[in-house]
Image (tube, rainbow, N blue to C red):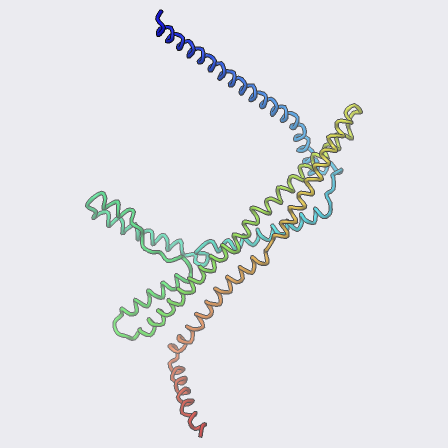
Length: 348
């Protein structure tokens, strides 16, 4: 055998041996992972097996307490129950307010006719698109018609509806023959402008209430108050387990008393710790509650809207009065002229 042939054969032997060693190592690693996984599953099953009786007993205990069959119930500290009541009151106030103020998130809350108007608008837009599609000469043109945005839509609010109907009526009167309705058309145009400004102010109010009131209350309910609720639930679970352990110890045989006493004392410590933790969390919830500040934001938003609405209507009403009673304007002008002529005489 030549040296080259020997070297080639030796190299192949080394590679084969290396492959076998690598495969055995991988098999050993997989075998170890499988054993570890089996051990973990076995341990988890064992843990669940030991927990199931406690869970079942806690559930049975809770049902017995609800039915009044058990009276030996561990009492929570007075400080804890007082904090529970305060947290519950805060939660109730938040939820009750949101039931009402969530209406500000519905744009058309003051205009029920928006549904009918929306249907009419949709029908008109659909008719226009169908008409345009019937005259389309290519696929691209038809696609452009379908994806083209619809006409601008005013918000569906009462003030915008009043503004729109006043503007439409003014335009209609201006188109009529003669100028006998020009004064009415002019008044309607001014009224339309007033209502449009009030509509904008109302939408601004709604946005402020949504972001500075509703959002804050929802965040408190979903974060701080939920955290407090979970802590209280944990206290109740630990209390049930502790009471079950006390009952088990009271009814235990002498040979089991030692182990059951250790279990009861451990659960007693856990129950006490859970109670202390819940007290801290509930105190934080109460201290972080800023409902008066949130209510202030609600009132500020409402005041800005009502104030601007009152100012706009107050400025418009005298103009309308003069249109209704021209003699008022004449007498006002006469009084002004009299005051002007009377000033030089007073100086003499």
